[in-house]
Length: 421
Image 1 (cartoon, rainbow, N blue to C red):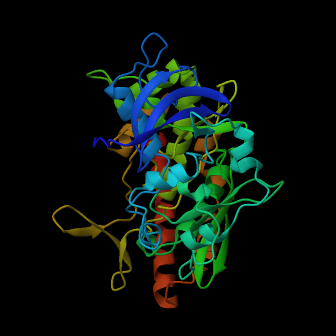
Image 2 (cartoon, helix red, strand yellow):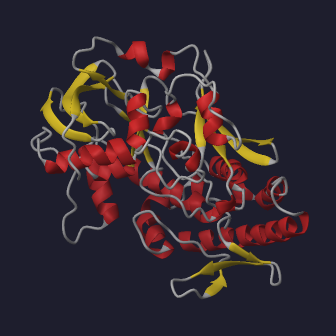
C-alpha cells in the first residue's frame, strides 16, 4: 500500500457509536488506525483475537478492502469517464466516498473529523429532506452535464459494481436504486433483474422486486432498498474475512464456520445458500458472488437477519456472443475457441462446478418448496414477453435471441431438477 505523508485524523462512527480513530489521506485511503474504541461495532472485515480487533497490517488491509473496494465506485465501471473525466480533480473513487463522509446506503458507518461535534442524524442521507438529483442524473444518463449542479455529495458515490447506478431519495419513501442497461450485457440487465426476482419469488426465495422503465431508448431497472436506517447489509466476502481459512477446509465450509462465529446458525446460512443456488441455476445467473450475497443485521443490536436475494443482471446468457446464422449463444474459452453457451452456466459461489454446488446443498434442499420446478410453469412465456421489450436490439436479432433464451431456460429447469435428485 502506498503511504501518503499528509493525512487527517477522523473518527470512524457506526451511527452514533465511536468505533475507531483513523488517519485518512488526501485521496481517501485509510493510512492509520490509531485506536479502537468499540470492537463489537468495528466493520466486519478482519479476524479478531479474543473478541478484539488487533492493531496490525492485516486489520488495516481489511478495513481498506471494505472501505475502498466494497463501498466505492470502481474505476472500471462502464461509462466511468463520466466520473473520473469531467470531475477532473477526482483521481480515486475513495475521494468521492470521503465527500459523503464515508456514508453508504447499505450500512451506517461514516467519518467525522476528530474536532467536529455532529451526530449521525445530522448527516445521514436517510434523514435528508432534499438531495440534489443532478449528480445522480449525471452518473446514469448519457449526455447530462454537471454545470450548474449542486455540491459534490451523493449517495451514489458509495455504490460499487460495473453497471452505472444511483439512489433516488425522496421524503417519506424508501430509497430506490436505479441501474442503467449497458451493451456489455446486450442492454438486457433491467429485464433480467425483473425476471430473476420473479423466478426467485415464485420458488419461495424472497427476492427484491424490480420494475423496468424506458428512457431515451434505453432500459433502466428500479427497486426499493431492502435496507433502512435500522438495518445494514453484510456480504459473504466480509463474513469470510472474520477468520483465516485453514488448509484442507473448503471455501463453503469456511463460510459456514465464519457464519457460526457471528452467531448465524448453520441451517440458516446453508438454507439461504441453497435457495440462491437453485434460483441462479434456473436463470443461468453467472454473477452470484461473495459481494451480492449475505445477510442483514440490526445496526444497533448487531443481531443478524435474513436478507432477500438481489442482483440478477448477468443472467439468461446476456453477456454471450450471438451467432445469427446458427441462432446460438457462444462462449469463448481461453484459447479463443467458441462453443455453444446454452444451456451451460459457470458457478461463481464457493464451488467450481454445478455438481459440487448441488452436492453441498443436497441435505438442506431435499423436499423443500424452493426446489419445486412446477412453480415455474409458464415462466418461459413471461421471459419471452419481457425480453421482447428491449429497445436496443434490432427486431430480427431480438426475436432470435429471445427464442434461444426461452429454449435455454426450458433446458435449465430440467438440468436443475436433475441436479437436485
